[in-house]
Image (tube, rainbow, N blue to C red; front, side, top):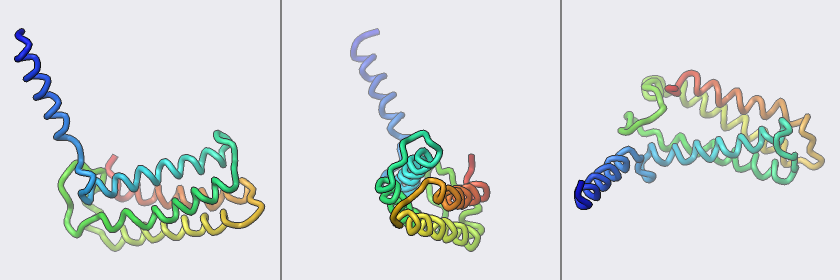
Length: 149
């Protein structure tokens, strides 16, 4: 196969793979970025509480505060009508907006409570386990109803 043909085929493949990317400035792209940050932060917190990562109270407090801030952000990136693109959001997000908003508020409330508790002096992992589990439960409740796996 001539070199020029190989280059054209390679370019075509690269172009096609780029088509699957989500525009990071689109509502879908924006909420995916936020959800990934939330997951990373939550995994760090969970790792500290479950002994996979050494517990560090100042880092935990900072991360809990970040999670509380992030938990308020993705909802603005769900437009009134379903957006284009490969999304994990079920149609129910748009069909049952009231319930979706309730679960979003529940996540905001549980993360704010965790951040407040984590800001107190003399933190112990045992005192954070239950509030962190409430955050995880809030995430899971929304995923069960509104995320397409």
